[in-house]
Length: 348
Image (cartoon, rainbow, N blue to C red):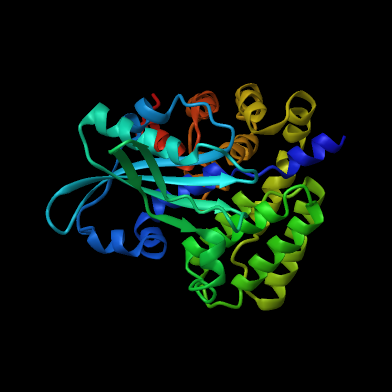
């Protein structure tokens, strides 16, 4: 029973980070790595290099939860530059971290003959862990890789104390999620503090919903605490007359999904099982609506933006069934959006 409760609280850190890195790259680099941000020509759209990255790091077996993205940008000098962004999310020490970073860095160079700028986000709780260099020396031979790092707990205590931008709010959510791992009530209190504060910071509805979506993705609650959180949030929004996050439609959708969710709980647990469950469940549910499919997509891709959910609701039955099959291979919201771009409106 205790093991089950822990799984209910498990959070999709890597999914939330990938989403943040992809959708808010410019703002994230501005906060996390200002010199690199200042060197990029942002009038040229960055291009993501997922296939190239997977050839080097995609098959690696790693004990902790790193997030790697590779992007190609144009510098102000006019040169093209590849940037490897690595977010390391750890709750226990790891030996050989610097060597692993150097291996990825060198692998990209030797595979594609491209000089790579490697940046590392340290999303951990250890005050004394600040890797920044891989050094190998024998006699007068020396090989050295120095990489810039952004240590979240350091920055949150110093220059980010009064920074409420989206990338910094994500950093706060990550640190609080790690601090409250295995403590459902503590997680609830920490999440409530973060979300409650959003309503006092002057965000518009769209900004607040987006920040809430990422916090919610990163700080999962057990089902009873999730229901309690939604009730208190609804009451808060009614009091403030700010219906930014909760809505009658969303609550009704959650109730409609309860039947399918109960069947899913009986057959599978956690994110991987949810994908397998969704294949059969979503196809049956499609005849009566898309509620369960939206729920399962939320488990795999994180909380869905309303415009994406609306696109799914508008799909005909054959495409709903096809999406139920396709989600087995999804790992992030961008995978879902790419599928919709390719398949929406293509049914006979």
